[in-house]
Amino acid sequence: MDIGSSKEKFHAHVMLLQNKITQEMLALDPGLRSKEDIWQRTDHAGDEGGGGITRAFQGDVFENAGVNTSCVFGKIDPQFARHLSGTGDELWAAGISLIIHPLNPRVPTVHANFRMIHQGDRFWFGGGADLTPYYPYEEDFSAFHGVWRRAAGERYDEMKKTCDDYFNNAHRGIEMRGVGGIFFDHYNTGDVEKDMAYVFHLSEHFIESYFPIVRQRMGEDWTKEDEDFMLHRRGRYVEFNLLHDRGTLFGLKTNGRVDSILISLPARCKFSYQYRPEAGSVYDKMWSYYTPKAW
Image (tube, rainbow, N blue to C red):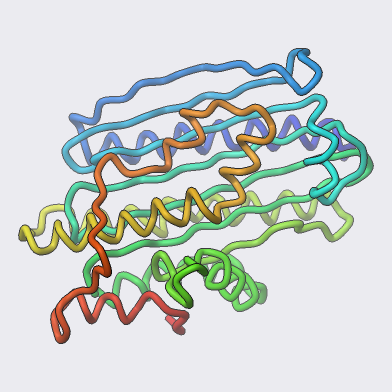
């Protein structure tokens, strides 16, 4: 398979996955309101540079969410190009990126993305999925990781460690934004067809990893204390996305759609000076899980 047809196949796959995830969300939240935005961009030279499909959601189960696909190409800033893994200052990139922030604090936030990049004479894949819970249902964390352990196979341990290390508010020491999952970047064995098949295999497990948790927890009663803890942890989520997230930087540096990039932010969050949950509380227990652990 040549690289050109591989890129077309990858773009088609992420758009199909976008539709499947949208259907799952609608099945769980029939009143879900969506706004679809089909956008175009220009590249660094001012020429046509592709675009994407942003889907923004608000509902009774999912407070706010974004399920986005994009396929961009063309010239990029030469200074930024030097920080990437390829050669030259022309780039092609396609992928799906999603973030789901539920209303009920007993339901975790989730993030996932899967992408293919081609720069000069090199191509690579990246992506993963990670869970940010607000209530210590350890069985949910084990179930989420169990799906990804089976999907990733022998690469799971490496991908889990990469996820633990990356989705961490390093400016606060070792404080992960959630309980991790898998993450990988610059994946390239030299066989584009084999690599792409593996990434397709991973991406197709997202629905299985997350929506059963939503289905189980979405009807549970919750308290104002649950909500307060969730909002504070969402504040930490914002810190990570604005200070450390490479996808945010990549989108902004490649002239992406700003609102489509920042759709990952929660509709509501909270910051309190030197916030920490009460010692011995259920939230203190949840806090103890925001460090690397075996699930």
